[in-house]
Length: 389
Image 1 (tube, helix red, strand yellow):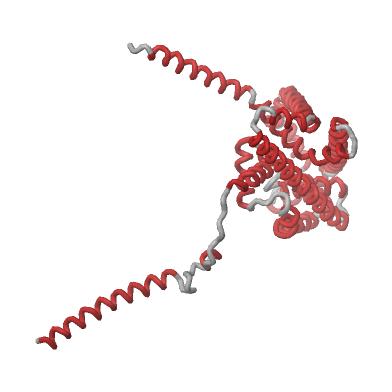
Image 2 (cartoon, one colour):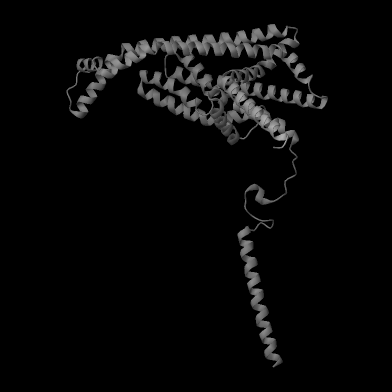
């Protein structure tokens, strides 16, 4: 046995053990790493506001606290307003449920020639086996729901704590990171950090502005249609449509449609038509103008990044995918060498050559020319032979 073989085996086993240990630790800490990533992007989003307040003489810790306090107050007010709206609307729907049930039973009896009654339907529902099983499962699942809610609150607190430290100690964190790097790398790290702050903050602020415009537009519609809880519904549509990518608009429009349907079924159709029309206006007019200076990426790249972020990190990944890709694109743009594009009509998608003629036509003409040249040469040779004879 060679002398190096036992040492190689021990080294291979040690490396395999370290790999297994790292894989186990990574899967155990994936939740914490996700919270840190969320907190980092949240800190990048509020970095401009904190920096402006710090530049005016306010301590950075106090400035971060004030920004977070404003965010928490706005979020709590929105939740309370939306909760009161839903509670009042659910109570109204419960009061009107017998009338809805009577109208449905009447329609069924007239359409299918049945003899159903509300009392019979209620008795069959109350004594059904699936309802009893549902109640039992709901009673046993109360503890699971409470555990999920507490876990969500703990995760939210963790994210806020990490983001507070990232925002409040941002200069110290950058200084500590740059202290272990050579000067050239320090400049690159600071440049990447600055780009990330600009892109993330610009993305969230542009989304907030579009949420404001969307909320005002839907509020005017709901007031015109005399739909109840118009302010809360407008805030709901504005926030959900902008901060849930791709399908947020349609999820946001579902609740106003439901509330409008309780007033008049035709109002729900009006709300649906307005949501579709406004979505086209936002995609083709409003969004390009607001995001062209902040997040300048192709719509297909944005859509693909949202899908990739959703696959990797769920809803959180879908939210942070666009600013992350925009940051990476802006950072790598300085290292990609670009050349002047040749003045060729094919660049514009015309599919024509330099002389303005289609490529297939040029190839066909060249083939015909070569064939005629061969035929002409053969005929000339034969004629010369006959003259010589």
